[in-house]
Image 1: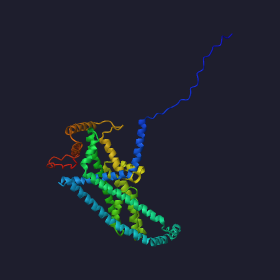
Image 2: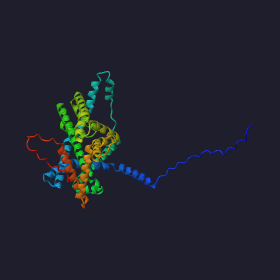
Image 3: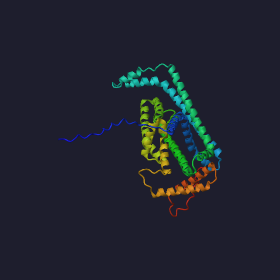
Image 4: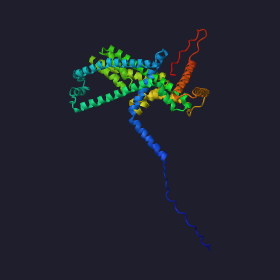
Amino acid sequence: MSGPAQSKGPEPSAPGPRTVRFEVSPTTVFMLILVAASLWLLVRLAPVLLALIVALLIVGTMSPAVRWLETHRVRRGLGIGFVFTLLFIAAVLLLTITLPSLVAQVVTIFEREPAFRAGLADQLGHSHLSAPFADWLRNLRYGAPGNTVGATAFAYSMRIFEVAAYGMSAIFLALYMMLDRDRLRGGLYAVVPRSHHIRLSRVMLNLETIVGAYIRGQLVTSFLMSAFTFVLLSACGVENAIALAVFAGVADVLPYIGVFLSVGPAVIAALGQGPAVAGIVLVLMLCYEEFESRVLIPRIYGQALRLPSSVVLFSLLAGGTLMGLLGALLALPVAATIMMLVQELRVDLPGEQEQVADTEMRAKDDLEEEEYERRTEGVGAEAAAAIAVEISAERRLEEHRSLEPEPEPGAGPERAPEESGLDG
């Protein structure tokens, strides 16, 4: 006989739906709005920032020449005026040499285009494979000029005027920055804590070195392109070879489209000597462009900016992919700047371990900061900036001396090193 049934307690109720609440603090909302406003302002001021970057590049390029004049007892203001006058004269001579010849070449090409097209169609008509293309050339008709041509020309003229205006603004901004160097540098150091002034001075000196190395690399590659184009066109009997060579060297500065701007006018000018000569010029120019991009650029910029060849090619590809022409143009100095910042700011990378040399560098940094604090006690930001640059320049000069090979015994007295000539 079974016992009395045991009473069961009340069954637990099923859990209700959980509510997840996201609470955003007013500070977070303010920061998000501030970031969005900063990005919007950055996009709107992109042309102004680009002009500022160009001005800084001009300052970095002109500063070594101005310092050289200062070491030869030329006043800074007079030296700046002399350097910028030479730059202006060089730009005027460049435009005077290239533009009239290029315009004349374009006019001649348009005048000869119907006859050249007819001759090319006759040559292609002899083969069954190219006969359809020959018929297409004979029947080719250009669209009648209409209002769109005038509108397009006006749009391009306004764009050219805008670029020229920003370029002139960058030049004058660079001039003012060089003339007012001490106050601008003092203002920059005034917003940075005194404990970081030594590192800031080293970074600024290295940035100037990177910009100078980049400009020198551009000058070398442009000169080689001009020399090759001049020799090639002169050998092929092309008229106005020097103007086309100068234009090819200037256009070689631009990544990607520089190939078309360098090769296109040379090939078009060679068409006057016949299709065979134009084909030879096209093939040789393309071969040189490939040689320059694969061999010259990694070696020249790698040595000047202290970048491995693989980093040079990767930086150009990454910069062009992210920001197009402007990104490819600024990719190498940006990559060199990042590597310099990692080294100068003593950033500890995950896969690195601190070495004895790193410990010695940190000890030197501490000594320099102590010396700087002692020498700048009660001194304003402008004078403190000059002292920081002086200390950093002395250290860099000592590092350069330590890297120089010691003279062999009996080779004569050691030549006294020249002064650094750096800003102080």
